[in-house]
Length: 93
Image (cartoon, rainbow, N blue to C red; front, side, top):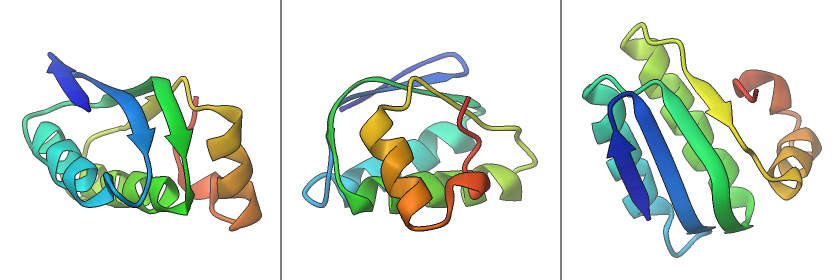
């Protein structure tokens, strides 16, 4: 689901409602440990909960004065963020 290596968090598999709570918790723990790059290139599926998780991670990073970068976001995630009008709130590279 989430692998942490240094400042990089790699998310694998589905980012959907079934995984959202665990993803949110694991990502926030990684950010608390100093992670600042989230790699979504290996995400296989997204739904609207993925947007909520990324917003939570973005808020968590901001609270810790970290500059978060989200890379490899699938087009489906970008489309959902745009649909909900929050694309500009996410640090998508």
